[in-house]
Length: 116
Length: 114
Image 1 (spheres, rainbow over the protein chains, first blue to last red):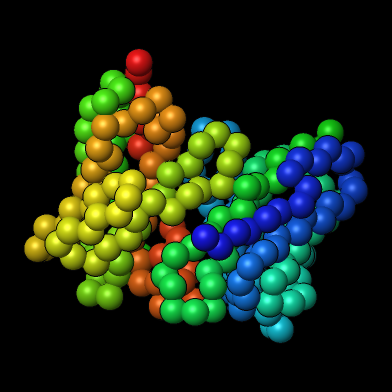
Image 2 (image 1 turned 45 degrees about the horizontal axis):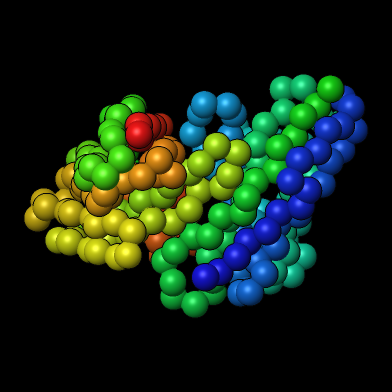
């Protein structure tokens, strides 16, 4: 089946620094990828839609200047958390759907971000 | 967006069949129903998807009544490794780049006991 990877799997950073998280589709192309965040014991919240070759579309309430998304190629999207603060500590997950007509979304393993 | 309602938690024993029902009263004509499984600190995993009637794959069955206002995920003979959170999502996978089909509700926390 299709595989989506994320890197790093976990990261600890100091408050005020920026962190980049990569999402890769390993064996398929994805024009569109999605980014979520998940707090402990809570559900996934869709943050933004990442589009190859164009600007990302952010969900209401998500700061686009804080969560920078770059969809550099058909297999790579990156999420950069800028000027991170402890409240940004969360589990960040990406997903992608093959550009074929498959309706299935494939999710990455997630990245645990801890801001100290 | 079609809102979904699921039981918050369910308990079962190994070897039993588990049925998790999801209500989605305002499902739209083009909406599909998709179920995902999530283990702690992992991304969700696709289980099954359907539009109407019954869909079966190697891990589960999905039952959808004619009015499509609810759906039931059936897991046959669960094992301890099926302990996870199960999410029911409803939306049009072709609309808005699939975004509308990616609204996660609270999910159902299934605990399988030995």
